[in-house]
Length: 366
Image 1 (tube, rainbow, N blue to C red):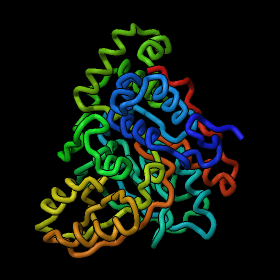
Image 2 (image 1 turned 60 degrees about the vertical axis):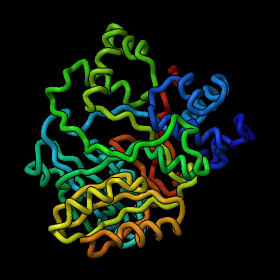
Image 3 (image 1 turned 120 degrees about the vertical axis):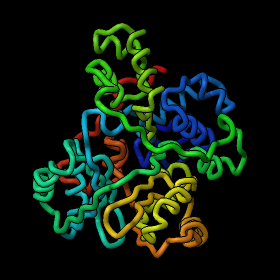
Image 4 (image 1 turned 180 degrees about the vertical axis):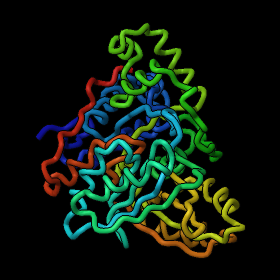
């Protein structure tokens, strides 16, 4: 049976058997998914050939996928809805298989608890366009119940879990991967179509499938000048209107408890509680929803015990928190509009006529 240089068996649960260097490389990719292998080797305190070989293998195995995506609003006004779905018995995977390919689905997760699936649905043109879209999606075979909740305001979207990953994977040795982390956070930018032209959007489309492909290759694909592609990309990045995301299952980095918390808050304390929760490194995503003056909070913890400590020590201690409900994420097939490269392999036997996984079209060239 074939293995890679770290002794990991290829093609069988590819995120099992990661060693310390693999995890350091992933941490570095989450910091900057387009960093050169030379820069990543320096961050990881390892040789360039070793880091290049290991990093390219992680990408080829589907352990991590790098994609570049525009911020919401790049094509016009949108509204986002948080969706909770109950499925007919045994139909969860079939429904997920349908939803994951839909262009309006930004996030999708299979969960425990009251619901079977949770998703974020982004509606172009505002809430007025929602009835038509919801009718289309609710007709998917296997959906039994559908609950929608408008997302009023997003406080935090964390594609880089660096600080927590350092603690979880490097044993509280800060500074070993590109220095200390800053726990400050910024809310998503307000980016409109004015920030992009057709050339910008073409570049982003090329970088969505492989966020590490070189500017030279993108220029060749689009019949553009390489310097123009680079200049446009850096302008979009500097304006905060794009995200470079490194998708990776948290379990691959020793983080075994991904959970969606719905936190009920006293109306007068909603903003204060949100601001305090957003500073927690365990919180990857945080938004205010319309229903029940609540906050939707996605939490990453190393274990169930750590999740318990976060809930009882952090959430419960905040003035204004009135209670919460929770669903543990078993598997997320899609995030940031990008399909994860591993979810089909994990549940292949249960998927009806699975679509082929889109491979990384080229070896990473950066």
